[in-house]
Image (tube, one colour):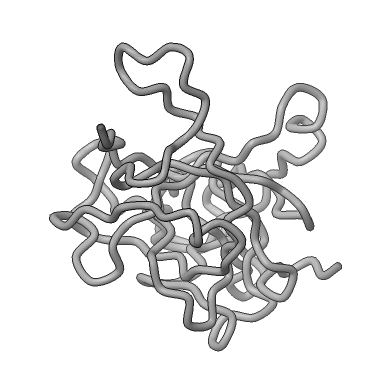
Length: 190
């Protein structure tokens, strides 16, 4: 029986000393309200959200500097606050929901074996929030100019009453699985 995963924010997979090595603080751009887990980019020397709603390699090459570890603090002027984020380095793994491209908030997406190993677009949907606030980011099931590479069905969510399950299965809906960013989307280069 297929399991339907809850929609949650992106979570980088970095543990212990590696995570402490990847955490950075940089002054935040003005009026930033991004949620935890949002991909971030440089904005005139400050950190801000990477895109209004979507990321792909055709429009956003060399863009993503990291994933927000603290929500945007909505300062009036650039530099009012520092943003804490996980630096996006080549090979950094992260967990994200794999959702429908057209209507991710009200349509389910079944994961297939062929999905593993492909590149997909990243999106934020204003109808999907964790706290009733800002839109959370996910990976959409569209491969055109994809920037997130699905590497594994391993998940950071254990389905209820299934303590021995360590990942999504073919047919699961809105699965939370493991991705990495393709090198060409990274702001720091390879």
